[in-house]
Image (tube, rainbow, N blue to C red; front, side, top):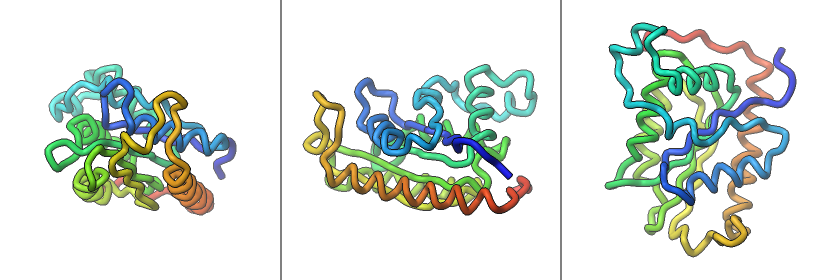
Length: 193
């Protein structure tokens, strides 16, 4: 049985300085001091996924190997990414591609979030990511989308409006419950998908 603070793989799909999506992950982590979030910048350091490199474990670049180690050790995943051209960011998809061969998302309770300046709140980015998560065997427990985010985030304090914080806290509570449930069950072995 696993004990201690559950490790959470934090994947930020935005490389922008002052990213609202990184701020969403920070909000989730602030509201959950009982969870151990990995650094949000890991995905931004990844090289482009190359399946030829992945075949040779020794050839995997250090940032990708570190990211995969965090994924394998994690009991849950939080992904937050923006919408670009009506889809997910390249950084978010690239990060997920690096996890295909290591089983880093299999059976992991997952929270998917997005913040966008537009009225959809990043929903167009979430649907393709959900398809990938299902393929990778992740267990999607909740989603949060924040439309018109610039008006709902105070750059001076680094805090979202109270309704956004409440939604993030509720989603993290669902993630926490899923982690507790999963701790009582054996993990599925990665199968050929």
